[in-house]
Length: 166
Ligand SMILES: [Zn+2]
Ligand SMILES: [Zn+2]
Image (cartoon, rainbow, N blue to C red; front, side, top):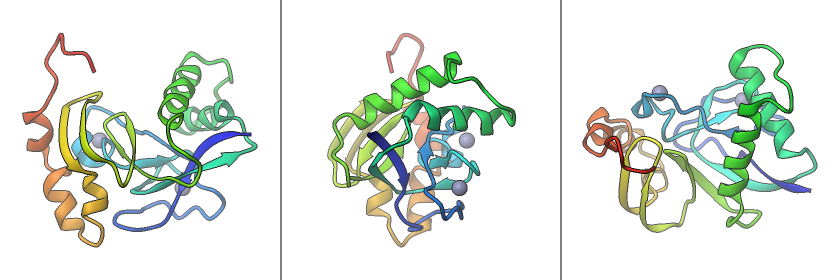
């Protein structure tokens, strides 16, 4: 058994309609404001959702990440593919401190327990200084989250410059 992330619910924003466990990963590209930087991506259908839950899974994380890369490239990818391995290591690292049952949100390369406070880190794209998890604070208000993490200005104002380590 190992830890994995599945869709927790359809609160806030959730385009994924998968009913069998919808495994979560990051689909982040160079446009984090579109949602790819602050929503999870379903490994199967590649649609986004806001909240995921840490579960113990019989399916090895690497196999889940293999499925993720295969859906990304729309063709089968090998288990020993370099990207599969590095994404597995990333998610293992993120899940390590989170107990099974934790509800989480995604932000810029980090998986955050939704009750986290005083959030300070340099992500893949930007520097974040937040009192609470914005997706959690914005539950019930898409407009609220669109105005913050969905705003291009939020990201560009905090963008890491060359030389800053993420
Ligand atoms: Zn899905
Ligand atoms: Zn994007």
